[in-house]
Length: 340
Image (tube, rainbow, N blue to C red; front, top):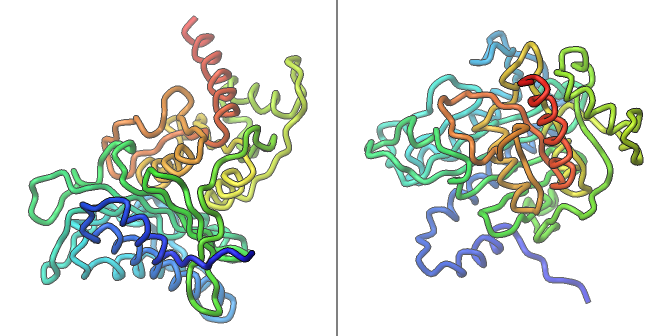
């Protein structure tokens, strides 16, 4: 028997029926994110044919040269939501301050945080890139939202997810009740349910993903961890395989489906880590935890970290729970040695 075709719209409606108190506002946010993803996917897929590749002439808040597609994706997401009356405000990795809803549009009860195009350094090489998003409830008394509505602990997310633009375009999201993946069928312009109830395999594949070009700058515990994963220390065990795309969405999408360990540790140049807590680590941690995995900064769960600023950075160890546990043990050994 062939299974029935389930669009993302139908899936969202089915999920909404499980909550009689739902008003439909939250479902609208997911619809609009799917629409924005379709528009970004279209431009990514034809990027080699039009003048949209390459860099603009300005930097973002992090001092990084903004790619043209970064700029396009940022604008598409903002304009997909600014007029809907669903959001009180937004925050983007590309902008220093929160993004206010234009005064002539109504506001709503949610805030949206997003990384419009993760892995943009790979754009010109035609390597997979992605969009990451996180949704919170409005918590402030400000009539049109404020920074307080965006700077919230990850555990309070009501939705998180990502879109990967690769050989196919996939949207993966969770509301805390299972992780579901949808593949875009370009012939009909619809996201179709292709990966229901995703769970990280147990045991997962023995794969680790990290930028080993930073090896010399890592602390000793991190170097020992990678040596152990390679099977070249004295602790034994079969070696892991190394896979590193350099696009977080692509690396974590593989980790979610196959299992393994993705790491972006702190180093001497980035003692607080490099990934952004609110735009990258929190939504990905929410997805992975709800698929049965773990995400930590090396000593505490990412989703329990209290953020203090919009662009706070954090180290990240994420993937199969048993492999994240292993990484934590090596990091803890280093901490004990340093304290002693």
